[in-house]
Image 1 (cartoon, chains in turn purple, red):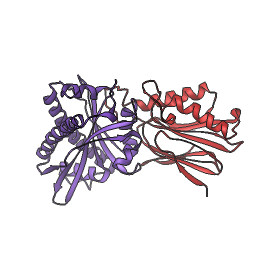
Image 2 (cartoon, one colour):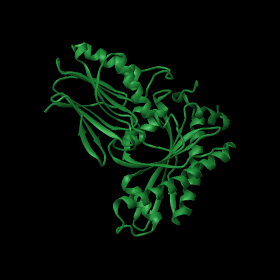
Image 3 (tube, one colour):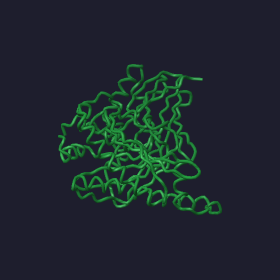
Length: 209
Length: 162
């Protein structure tokens, strides 16, 4: 594992960003079909940041956030996270459910929303992985989704710890999806977190290592 | 009112009374405090990972359980702490994402952090007098040298003092 993130060339960074671009493009299309609404995508970003500042990069460590995670394990292994602000996650879930939940008791409402969010994560992140699979020819079997609602800092620990095993820098490929609704806009960010050593495999496969 | 010091990820901070040490948004990470009420000193680390084995270099020893514990003890010794009077408290080590049927070590790093930190404290003969670890909720912690208590805050379930 001789890969040193700090010395990545611009070609390598571009290749990684392109993975984010195609993956998130697929994800946006899938989400748009699921919701029957327009979904826009920001220009994807691939950037190197300190593992100690990951949470701060997305907001305050104690801000309420929702993350949906799926794990791909095959010839290449990684975790994919769809990260939202807590309020926006509720809005997105309600958009998908399209049902008045005001008379439902709190616990049931949370369960219904979580099941919708798990499905959103499944569709979006699965579409991202499909694109990656097509680009690389790798079979990428995927796990069921897991949903967490908690402090942003706690949720992002999984990202910091994964990159932190080998060094002090994280390579974050992130894309923001924006869902336009009559009532406004909700958004979420797709973050790819390759297992230690997996990034090297990906760069090799893309022909830039 | 004592000064509040924030302990960032992988940081390690030592203080004399009066002081308050705070670390926010612990998921799989551990907030570990070792203190000596007899000489009124305390030190806290925000531990991210169990061991430094796979790291090429360790610029921040607070990051790993195996490097943080010895350095905390060194800091406390330099501040005049008495070895036999030292006590430890910790919180954190949660698993934020649980995928049924997948026992993945990257997602379960929290429990390995708890094990490694507990083992390091035992190795150095520091009694762990209180802890709130594991589960699937994030925590923020605050340690105060007035009371020598560790305040653990969790979303939804409120806070408790250890």
